[in-house]
Length: 194
Image (cartoon, rainbow, N blue to C red; front, side, top):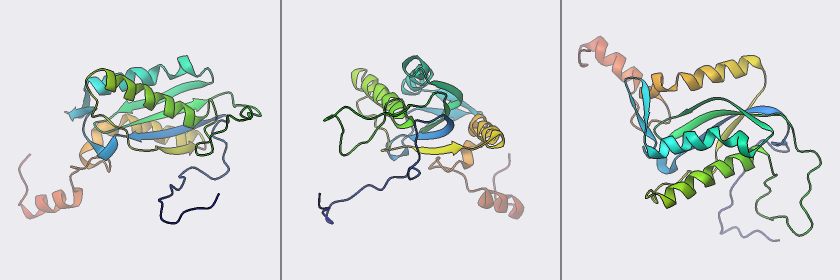
């Protein structure tokens, strides 16, 4: 197949040659398209979920009911994204699609991290389309980090659970407060009194 240079080609953000169906712990971040605030809002450092945010939380916690090889760890829904830890306990051994069933554009292995995320995103989108939230869209793809050891796991757990506390300065918050600007205003006496 000859590549057409005029077409956009997506570059994979996955670790090359890594088997995402093997045993391991994975930290994932899934964002709403254009980082729109449709999942909830942070009030007094606590997340208040919308109906879409609640359904995401519900479907997330149902993942182990559909993927026997998975357990869930720390998780949170934020106003425009979610963070979660997925632990795959039993890897898929020697999986090869049946002859003629390989999709030349997507090589999603059943029970892999990619198939888990795709299934969860599709379930939420389906629910939204059937419940008056047709405008809802996920950002294409998702971010993942392979958790390497116990220290890494504990740091990520802390990051996830502390996310609402740091929302004002979170990189996923398009309205984030610039801490340096805020500190300078306080030092110069130009900031607002708290």
